[in-house]
Amino acid sequence: MWSPRRDRGHGMTRYILTRILAFIPVLLAVITITFFLVRVAPGGPFDSERAVTETTKKMLEEAYNLDAPLYVQYWDYLSGVVQGDLGPSFRKPSRTVREWIELRIPVSLELGAYAIVVALFLGLGAGILAATKPNSLRDYAPMSLAMVGICVPNFVLGPLLVLVFSLWLGWLPVSGWQDPVDKILPSLTLGAMYSAYIARLTRGGMLEVLSQDFIRTARAKGLSEGAIVVKHALRGGVQPVVAYLGPAAAGMLTGSFVVETIFQIPGLGREFVESAFNRDYTMIIGTVLVYASLVMVLNLVADIVHAWLDPRVRRRA
Amino acid sequence: MSEAIALQEYEKGTSLWADAWHRLQKNRLAVISAAGILCIVCFAVIGPWFTAYDYDQQDTALGASAPSAAHWLGTDPLGRDLLTRVMYGGRVSLLVGLCATTVSLLIGVLYGAISGFIGGRVDHFLMRVVDVLYALPFTIFVIILMVFFGRNFILLFFAIGAVEWLTMARIVRSQVLSLREKEFVEATTVLGLPHHHVILRHIIPNALGPIIVYATLTIPQVMLLEAFLSFLGLGVQPPMSSWGILIKEGVETMEEYPWLLLFPSITLTGTLFALNFLGDGLRDALDPRVSKD
Image 1 (tube, rainbow over the protein chains, first blue to last red):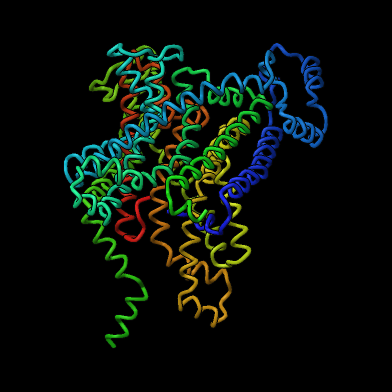
Image 2 (image 1 turned 120 degrees about the vertical axis):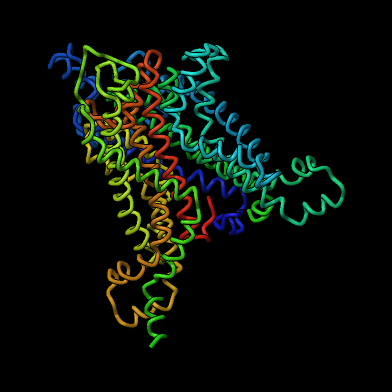
């Protein structure tokens, strides 16, 4: 389970610092690609408004410095980013891009956190259930369900859940993000697919650990099956899950576009999709920048947790 | 003489493929899935010739209607026959799946093969590039691309294909790295064959097993991405139909006409299901060493 990259005798701190330093070129690449992608493309933020006349458009572009040469704008934008300034929003001028992001991000993080909890709870439960009695009904039933969970896309699952639990049964609200009951269906929709993957990974990991000698010793010692699973097997068995959490969290960010759109949640995902449709240049780059940073930080955290849980990785780090 | 024939057969590699075919046939789920996929392909490709309607043929007097003898899956609010639209949508979805996978296959296989074959610093550099690209939020770039450059069909293939080639490149590279050390590749060096010849004629054919397996598993991923984009309104444009668009339209009217959501959802999910099972089956058959994740 250890990765050879860490097997060079660096200290953990040094490893983390190296990883954080590696963020810089990636973020620079993200900014550059996004900046030129949206600027080279036809159409601009002031094109779709019919009320805007040619002169007003000129004035607007002048006010936002959109008429300067592209490389000047690029440089201006970069120096702004370094100082934490993501520029004004062209289409929603009441706040700056940074203020919009600060407003939206807690909602998305909350949704993501619930989804992770759902995914871990269902996934670990189903995986342990299946691994403790392999090739029985207790194994096949949760694992078939997991296969279904992997194949049903979230934009199908979400509407179906709404159809059944909100429209037909009337138990839960259709959309919104106010009360605790509002948050059940979105979290379930976003977490379902990952719980399915986690169930499969847990089952595999647990089966491998449960077949090892120290488990046989624990059994010989007369420990109950429950104590063996919880105290001894789980720590090793969830290693693949921990390694998967980074990519899963990254995937959830993309999933949040759909879930936030379906359930009308005022989060960052919906903000991004909206800004892309509106061609709100600064807002697009700002949200993409935040997403890229989140993905990298989450991957790093997952790797650190992995090392912390697995003594083989830790000793080498 | 018989020895020569046996050797020839060995060189052709028939035994490996026959073996894999035998193993695949024993996997009942994979066989059922393959049959299901065949049915869906026929349904989408041949089906439209047998329906009495066109995918954009409206019947506003009829409006939305529940499944009936005239319209087996019902009609949407514009009176368009849902069965016909699911068939045409299937053509689009399957076409995107095939074409985008081909694009990702070409890029990934060539990139991985070159990286693994040349090795050394070039390999290190090329793989670092893949690492960096992995860290980029690609779905976001695809969304931006589709918004700004129009919802172009061809662009959709390339945009999706360009996202999905990274894992393929890694798989091919690791295959090539191990193949490179084999005697028959050393022999090509002795014979003085040019690099592109060695890569295209000797390395890639020997890495074909994992490539086929991963390509099969890429198709459902690609179809999912297309449906996702169409759902956001960024894929294929109305009145054209794809499964993603049908689901999007179904969601808008699901309270009154739930069948408009249910049937396209079932078709898409069933297809993804079958493709995933077939991919898993092929992996077990062709490449028993590779583990599931």
